[in-house]
Image (cartoon, rainbow, N blue to C red; front, side, top):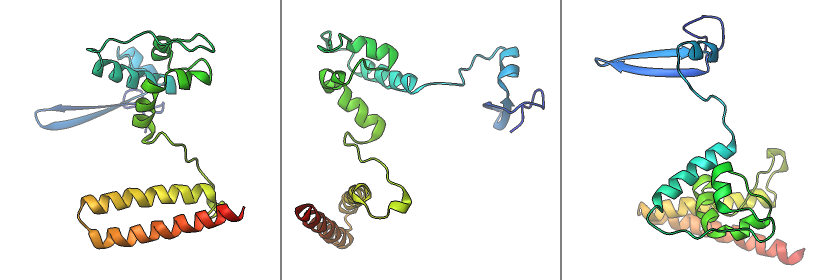
Length: 172
């Protein structure tokens, strides 16, 4: 989309304003946005995103007293992590696990890494784990929606996949 102000550059900032029940959209490039006095940060890192989630966590636990957590391996503190969004070493995951696990679960929806597999790979080990997880999620939704017949079919399908996996694992 082209900037509505200069008509030349690619718009990276998109504003929507509603006045008197009429919606008005403005699309600006970074240069025009700076000239108009809007200060938007258009580039952000994963550290910025994690810091935002950490800020939410800190606000939620503001009433609780936190002790200073320090990694025994590298000496990094949890407070440093909250400011930078980066851990000092692999041992930090263990040192800060009680605070990191809920954060990781909120960001990634799970604390167990399933990974990705290319489509060409077919039904490899990673993709079967991922499909099992998806089937279990569907099963939970079916039970919650009281669709017990479909839930029973999914349960049976999950059992078959688990049995195949156990059989493969015992043969290896």
